[in-house]
Amino acid sequence: MSAETGYYGVRLTLRATGVLTFRRMPSAILHISTYPFVPPSTLSGWLRRLYLMALGIYPDTAVDKPDYFVMPQQYHVLGAYPSPDPMASFEIHTAKRQGVRAFNHNAFSRVSGSRDKKEVYQLHTWEYLLSERFVGFVLHSECEPLERIANLQNYGCKIGKEGYAFLEDVSPVQWYERCTTQQRPHVPATGRELVGKPADLFVAYRHVYSKKQPLDGDPASLEPSQIDGYSLIWLGWPAQGIEMEYFSDGASLIPVGIVEEF
Amino acid sequence: MATITTASGLPKSDDRRYHFDIYAVLEAPQELYFGHETQVNVNVVETVRVKTDQGVIEKCYLSPTKRRGVERRSLIWAPANAHGVLLGEKLGCGVPHTCARPTCPICAVYGGLITGNVTVEVLGSDEDRTQNTTVGRLVHGGGVAIQDIEPSEKQRAMHPSALHKEASQTPMPFKREYNEPALLYPVYNHCLSVTEVEFTAVAYAFLDALARLGASNPKGVHVYEGAFLKPKEPLLVLDRYLAPLGKRPIISPAEVLIEQALSGFAADALSVRGKRIAKDFVSEQVDGKALFDRWIGEAALVQLQEYATKFAVKHLT
View 1 (spheres, helix red, strand yellow):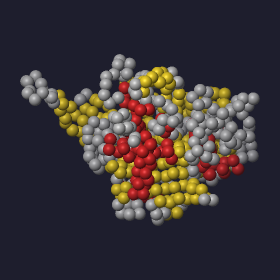
View 2 (cartoon, one colour):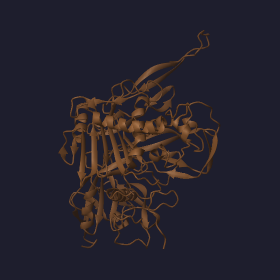
View 3 (cartoon, each protein chain N blue to C red):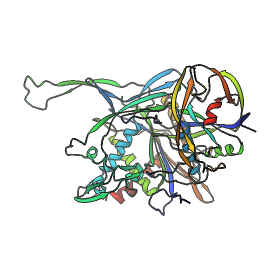
View 4 (cartoon, rainbow over the protein chains, first blue to last red):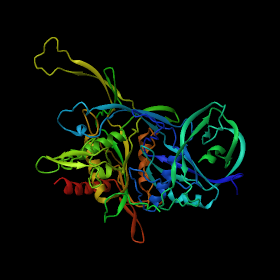
């Protein structure tokens, strides 16, 4: 089957055990804002971590130039979105916190003693995304690699900047047929598809795979992904259903643009 | 061709690493204050807004980040020897300066960061520390109260401390919100790939922090007692696993009915590999290897206490 006609796909249900933060970029220091969904790049790294956890492997987390561990590029990991309504089934909780200005003192854990002028707090605001379930999609041109994702069910791990989620459910592999229709999508469309249309837009980032990255990568291998960096992309929810090309299994609508980008 | 290091940077251990999860329902037996912000003369508690089928409701909140802070300080301030030294002093590990050594029982699980090379005074002698990061392998979750009861606002006054009162020394009135007593808070601690020795710090901190949760006074929560296999035992679940074979007892933040929330919690806790368990400890084994161990109720509490005892014997005596 070619990408022209459709893809195989699975629908993932993620369950968060608490509030989550997916730091929005570009970022500020004293205000940390969150995307109101699990960005595709985050979901990709989280899924790869689950593959490694299932093998009992704990990969490197270096500070300096850490290795990337994300899903191979044949897997179109499209992010996960609050359920049932991706645009509304969530709340953003803004916490006010007295945060750290400098790290080279222990004033905040002294039982007794004075603080000098540098040992002070500064006020932060921090956004947390509160949604119980997120529905995500992974598409692939072949059926068999997707069937193995079901083995990751019930595995969980830290996700994003704050919080923990586990893979509550993996749907059977479905065929997502290319079609043209006018409805609200279940995955955001790209900025290119939304030109001239009213929409809620977000700046997101996608991994730029190096030419060295083998095309037949195995997510269950310990080889780090060959990533050159990130490139910026606009994603957005159209204000109303607009006529576009989608991939659909009959229940979910995935704009064609995001599959081409991720 | 470049060599790729796939080692985690953690110290070599002969012990097996496991994933651990703690699931608990906590009850505050009195009012609880965990501040959010101070408006003019009103100290407000942190609440979250939750979408339900009936609309948006506001619920009291035992923030996971605050629980993490209390747990970490309970380790830093643990009495570490017979000469009045605290564990944080012994290790030279505090907040925000963490020692970030993977051998530190606190930083190994809670994580640490040294942003630049520093000299640290540890028990009277200087120690040079280099820039380092240890990624925390413990994540906190939950905290949204079950009951849909808004905080109550109370009038308080800060009185001058003088016994003899002059006319000018009038009390300063202010208002403070409190989470109401008897609210139930489901909370979860998740550990990624830690050894049992490393987990002892998590068990110690979880149990020790219970009495210390909350800002100002009064403080404290306890593990709520409800029905698992017996009609009344601590609503506590401890998992130690390589593969997650048990249903995860998570209470939906949108649930407001205590009975439904707790019966769902118990049903999930008693479901392992799709079967209902009839014992307070189950071990799922394949070829003689334990893939998933679950303790529930009193057995979970005793197992956490066992781990906490090991921590105290190793680090505090």
